[in-house]
Length: 287
Ligand SMILES: C[S@@+](CC[C@H](N)C(=O)[O-])C[C@H]1O[C@@H](n2cnc3c(N)ncnc32)[C@H](O)[C@@H]1O
Image (tube, rainbow, N blue to C red):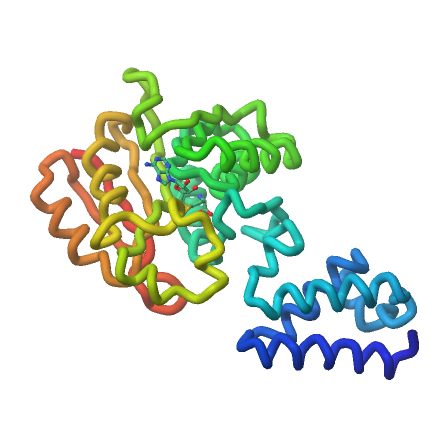
């Protein structure tokens, strides 16, 4: 294909996605081509045209057509990026979001700053395993327990752990919150990106988010059911100087502060904002 045909193909894809209401059309077309050609970004524009044959054009058009139905690109390609690493994703797991990278960054910095030797970490609601595997890769002496109520999600998490050679340091357990843990388990860090959307908010979600498993999103009338269970039970499983860190919805910080104020097992609370200045991660320390 020559350079003009290449640019026409890119424009064709972008126009179709834009018509379907997808704002990041250019970025998505680029991701599709990078994946199909398996090249770096710079090489796409230097040599991309030469690499494109009829088969690639056919695959490209099929992906654009599917994406124009607002089915998530990550499910179409079977992969998503998180904390600089590629993860397999299927409809059995939620597509990871960049906000959760903040949770990981805070947890990694905490473990490094406190120089915790062989930190023990529990990831409640592990899903595709992005938090678990990121911890395993960034903290090479950590031992992680990945818990999820969904067996299907844990299969994907295990697969992702294997692709980063991290499965030896991870215990996968199918569990409703803390229920399947042995009562004497204790952790330096309990992390969670829990479902935190309310029943009302769920109705207004964009089609891409509605493609995620409902169990990974919704948590009762206020979206707080799982968070309340986390706050209530985590102290039983934390080491003395351990921390509970979890992601929250944009409007939940005040309610969480109120709940923890009246819980005398907790000594400290910090709420960290994300890059959009939205309260995003709660950190709780024990008395
Ligand atoms: C928001 S997703 C987070 C997935 C992944 N950690 C991430 O950050 O992309 C929430 C996860 O919690 C799991 N989950 C929902 N209810 C649960 C429960 N009662 N006990 C354990 N896990 C649960 C879901 O299956 C889902 O994988």
